[in-house]
Amino acid sequence: MDLFEHQAKELFAEYGVPVPAGKIATTPEEARAIAEEFAAAGTSRVVVKAQVKTGGRGKAGGVRLADSPADAEEKARRILGMDIKGHTVHKVLVEEASAIAQEFYFSFLLDRANRTFLSICSVEGGMEIEEVAATKPDAVAQIPINALSGVDRAKAREIAVAGRLPAEALEGAAELIERLWAAFVDEDATLVEVNPLILTADGQVKALDGKV
Image 1 (tube, rainbow, N blue to C red):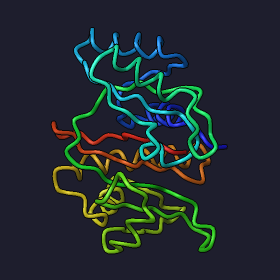
Image 2 (tube, rainbow, N blue to C red):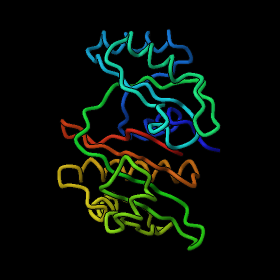
Image 3 (spheres, one colour):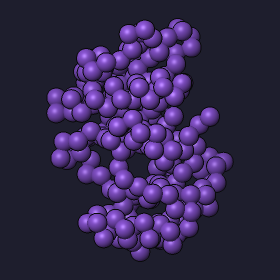
């Protein structure tokens, strides 16, 4: 069972994984109302994101930045009803805009071929991981996970270091990776992916996207 991005983030939040605040809208008017709530709380810019179970939303025009509630309504009107790789957009996630300093990639998955769990971490985020692996293989760390010992904070930090994450992101990333492992195991998942995992301008590490 694939989850929508907003469902994955709700799950992440239950495990203490930092995610941007956001709400679901099914009409342009609902998107405007949500953006107005953010504006009233001091956040004027939001991101309107198509909720479909496929990648490549950004390239298809399904992820748009809005500078005001009226702009959010207009962007939602453009996105709702779009076809993205055969998936019709019926709802959008209206989310607070994040001040992104750097983007990374992270995932846990079931490695069926080798009958083990695998973590993949890369300092190159925000694009298809297959593309990164093909063009910059040294930037992608693949680390097998022992099912019995799992992932504690030390192992999580080791993964972040192997992925070449910068020093200022290591502690936040290690904490987030440890919590993602708990979600991965507890929910009996075959994949937990965050692309991008971000370092914000004020030094926080957050899951800006989520696939489960």
